[in-house]
Length: 344
Image (tube, rainbow, N blue to C red):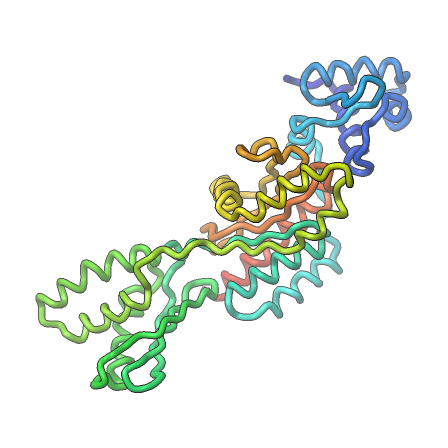
């Protein structure tokens, strides 16, 4: 339902007060903070209209009003004026991520910790699906007689290792030939497509008596593996959320901890967020199967050249400081983009 300018002004005051204090807001407080020059009685009428429209709730008859999910959605989508992260914080983020290592797994693990440290809430980072990452190169490193380590490197710094058995007659120069053939064939191709191409090309190479190509493809097939690897979710700072909730609200905390522990549920909602593309704020009442009405998720996707690979974000109480945390998560996601794009 459309809101009048007066209702928007009152709603903005109530939401921002609730974010700051996490307690019901009364009409007298709104009257003092508003520029409308209205009496508390007039404010009560406006607040009653907002309640009727579903934007406010009244926990107790004599208490003030609290914002509903609808109010927070309106605030985030319409009224929020996010602050740009201070230059000092931007420098801290850049320096921290620049020292996070070369492998994407290490970078994402440190990203979840960075978000948690800066938000004092839960930090999350979701790795790409293994089948969607793009082939950059493969190397074969001899380990011992009959054993070689296959090192698959994907765009953005993901690395996959696998120990393979080979015939003792295979020499170092053979491995170099295999490597060159495979890298020429599969450069920039998603892993799921690589696997499909390998299966179709092995039979073709066998029929054409191209033993060199066939051996290279068989090594690549073993290196890539047959099973789809589950997506890794890095979560940090779970203990910090104890400081953000009322000690009486232990049931809400239990629901959140169970949600974080059951990674399949967490991945379902994070996949939903990833598909949305762009900065997303999701309120707990939108998560089916769990009573997470007191929580919300701020998230932003990261990737390479507009191709989404995963998502980073934070989970906290519904009254968290969106004006600070939305730009924080967004900026960290953009820094990840820069790191990954520099490696393509």
